[in-house]
Length: 176
Length: 103
Image (cartoon, rainbow over all chains, first blue to last red; front, side, top):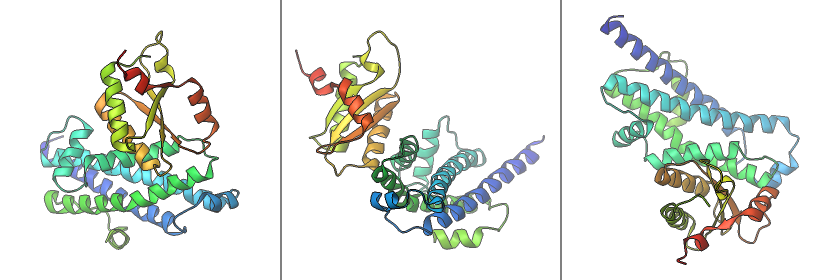
C-alpha cells in the first residue's frame, strides 16, 4: 500500500469512528432522556421487576461505556494523522487536554473508573444502583462536550468529518 | 502486611485529600498475607455519608496513578450498616494508620 492510499485509509477509519461517536451519542441520549432524574433507591425498589426500566438502565451503562471507549480509540487514531507521538494512552489524554478537547485528564479517568466500579458491584442495593446511574447521568454532559469538541477538532485540524451525515443533525442538537 | 511505609503514607495522604481528614483507612484482602505475592491493594475506607461513587472513583484513580498498582476501594459510610461484603472486609481488615505509626 503506498503512502497516499494508507493516508486515505487512515482518514476513512477516523471518519467511521466519528460516525460511531455520533451514533453512540444519539442512542445514549435516547435511553437517558426517557427517564426521570435523579433516580432514587425507593423508586427502583418499587419498580424492581420493570423490564423496560431495567433494559433502559442496562442500555445507558453500555452506551456510556461504548461512547467513552470509542472516543478514546478515535483520539488515539487521530494522532496518526496529526503527526503527534503518544506511546501510552495517558499521553493521548494529555495531548487532548492541551488541545482543549477534554476538560482534564483526571475527569476522563474518574468517569472511566466510576462506570467500571458500579458495573462490577453486586446490584441488589437499590440506593447504590440509583447512585450509579445518577453519576452516569451527571457525567454524560462532560462526555457529550468532549464528543462535540473532538468532532470540531477533527473537522478543523484534520479535515475529517463523519463518514455519513446520518446522525449529524441529532448529534448537533444533543451536544449543542 | 505487604505494603511499604511509603505506600502506606501515599494511601493515607491521598485518602484524606479526597475523602477528608476524618476518613479511616483499612487494608483487607490478599495484601494482608505475607506469604503471597503481587495482587491488588484492597482498601476499606470509612467516610462521612456524603461521600459517594464519584469520590470513590477519584480516590481509586489517584491512588492507582500514584502507586502504579491496581487498587480497589470499598466505601463504608460512617453510621450506616453497609452490606454483607463490607462486614466481611471489616472482619479481617487491618488499620493503616496504626501501621504507619512510629513504633
